[in-house]
Length: 625
Ligand SMILES: Cc1cc2nc3c(=O)[nH]c(=O)nc-3n(C[C@H](O)[C@H](O)[C@H](O)COP(=O)(O)OP(=O)(O)OC[C@H]3O[C@@H](n4cnc5c(N)ncnc54)[C@H](O)[C@@H]3O)c2cc1C
Image (tube, rainbow, N blue to C red; front, side, top):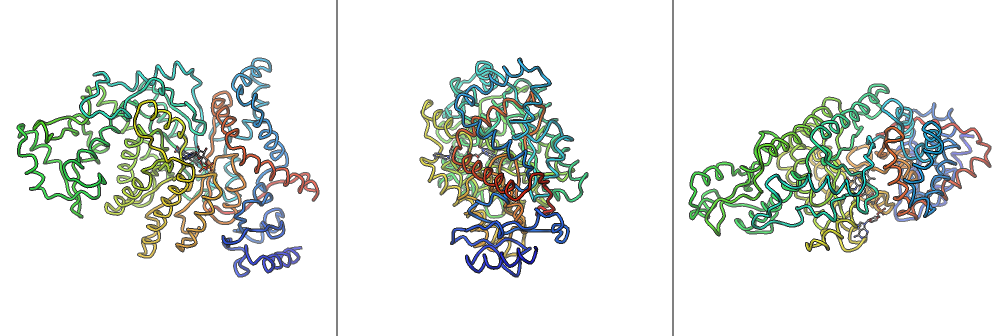
């Protein structure tokens, strides 16, 4: 039988001239991107259906069909019942009324069936399909199964509050205004001030979860939840040694850890500091283009009257080894309990006075900021000790400068020997390439490991609507194609730098996750990796998709030796209902992908029926890279 398979594989190979390098049939998949891949089931994965074969080859790697049409490879980790459930769930998700009223329907079902029956129904359907389990112990079989099919976890404890729009707006407005009031000081940037109409940050967002600030105690609880998530990954690593090789990931959101007002104010100050720098030094506002000798800088401020404050300001100015000027001690915001109000005072050339770039914060607000940083520090330190990675999600543009900056400072502090902390860059933003290039350059100059997740972005409609309503320029790319170009050029820049490091023998200084369900983007990444001589085993590029979304991409990637991740939500049934509701809506928005998933599911169900695999038991022994 094995002989027959080999013959068939070779003839397929000869016929289409692709897929398998005969010398490396059990090694990494070879992909030929210039040709459409024509699949034969014989040419596809051959190692796992038959358990006896997996024993013979301890680390199987399948050829990769980059047209992602290989139903067998996509679903070999699933039982027949799971396939049927997936098909039913996706079909239900295509009924408009069901999706629109799904939350009400779930609540109605609960009141009719009672708690126990409702939970069973959910487990047999939506919850079972989209969620990994209730707690860190119950998800373990799922993680184990994914691992045995070459896929690693990004854990996300998906318990969400189910609050009304009014409650969300009330909380957000209260938590976004400084105690001193929302008095917009000179040169205020309206983008970084709360606007009630958009205070419910869930507006038109399906693929991301939203935290609303209640008080410091809830932030503390969120921190503990993130740490439990880290423990879940660490326990999994311990329970099945080598399971994730220290590459398991926990996703976190900074808005869960502190008052949004502070992120807004820090974001505003970052943008104002850039503008100020441009005013003083000239140039484009790129932090790495600012060169000015100390005496020239001093000369610019000769009209400032408050000499003592000026002296303090000039004392904090630093230069790196390339002579680049840094006006503010950014690392101080995470290391030295530095007060925001005092740090961001600058000499104003026009008035000759010292001015604040940030609204005065009260001691309580300064303490809240330090609390947020302390929480983040506790999480990252725990991650380092447990050998788990942290991925900080990207959120709305009015928080993003602060989130990116804080995360970068944590990278500088903790990514000294490997990338533990990862930032996220949204390529639907016009400035994505500039931001990534600047941060890559900072990581290189300051010698820390750079980790990033590249996404298209989850808040497109909200960003556009808010910008239009508040009258500031739309921060997003004008078209989907422009976003794709931005994604691809940003990824190319990362790969170019990875290659440079590799050529110099400095491996793994940059690690990138291509977090996308877009086949073209995944193919682009694979092609570019090849072009840059970057092997999957170099472990510098990985791929990420949501659990139960585009399995036809994730599993074939993992099974063919690429580093593949699933974003894995977990939590008790009743508490993840808002997550399930969002997923139902999200599926409606990605109909083309769901149609493909459904047609592949149908094909695989039929194949198994016709080949007599009624009691198919998934059994993989792939080893994730
Ligand atoms: C593992 C993982 C982690 C993620 N983390 C984050 C995160 O931290 N922050 C975050 O914001 N998102 C995050 N996302 C969500 C990601 O941004 C969405 O998956 C994305 O919106 C869908 O893009 P896609 O690459 O999967 O491709 P596709 O599904 O092909 O992209 C289609 C989407 O592109 C969008 N689009 C982008 N630009 C434009 C434009 N100019 N015009 C029209 N449409 C446009 C549309 O909204 C459309 O829904 C994450 C996703 C994954 C899988």
